[in-house]
Length: 194
Image 1 (cartoon, helix red, strand yellow):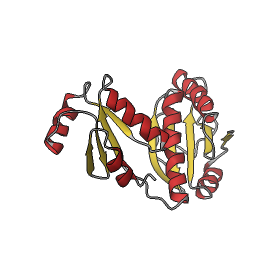
Image 2 (cartoon, helix red, strand yellow; image 1 turned 180 degrees about the horizontal axis):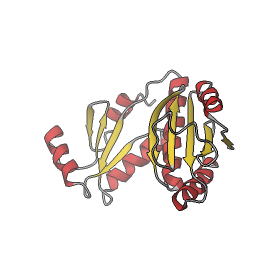
Image 3 (spheres, one colour; image 1 turned 90 degrees about the vertical axis):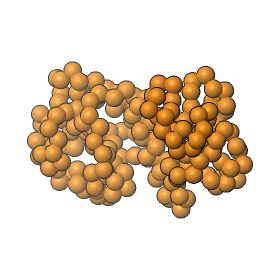
Image 4 (spheres, one colour; image 1 turned 30 degrees about the vertical axis):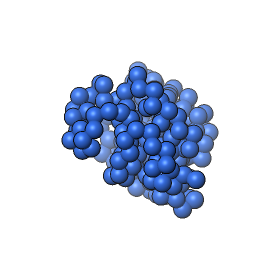
């Protein structure tokens, strides 16, 4: 995937309004953080497909960042049908960007196929074998999820007990419904996996 260098706000507006999803990296060449962000953005562009990736050097292009209220760079701007949806600041690792782009591609595919995008959160610990099995199953079925490691976040563990009355893992929240353990039948029903 190539990254298109943007020359100004008019070109940016044209490209983002003609595409469902677009990402713009604002950076300043010569800055250590910006150079890091540009290198990682370029690396991650090879890992993604079907997304519009753009870049603009604020040393050369001065009319974009004021429009969106961007005070510092590097900043990655996410556009959805021409509207700014999200801003990610700083230099992100390629795998973080890849994950971010994969979620966007997943959501776009689901919408294109007319399938509902589910909010899925898995509560787990690194030593839990059933947690690993559950996450592998979700990945195999192309279900994007957020993983919360309760061993690192005591607040999440307490929240989990208050919401479900259970403290064991894995526990999965799917659009507000809970699955305790690896209950494949219930997962298939809630996620419409056939």
